Length: 96
Image (spheres, rainbow, N blue to C red):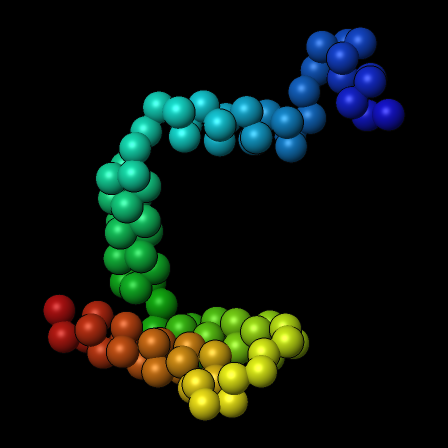
């Protein structure tokens, strides 16, 4: 229904505008562009957050993954992997 209304009065929803913008960006930029902005975002996040932040998001990610079906018990839990990754990232930031 919302889509029909949008066609009648020529207005886009925020969702449609975002999708079209994302599609245009992906046509105009290559893999290196996304790697560069990802690197910059990661560095900024590392400057603005501490080990607790990374541990918390690792914990949340671990919980989300634990709710998915996994059958391989030989692997490190996602929660533990997130915790270790958070500590490693914080240590790397502190070394710089």
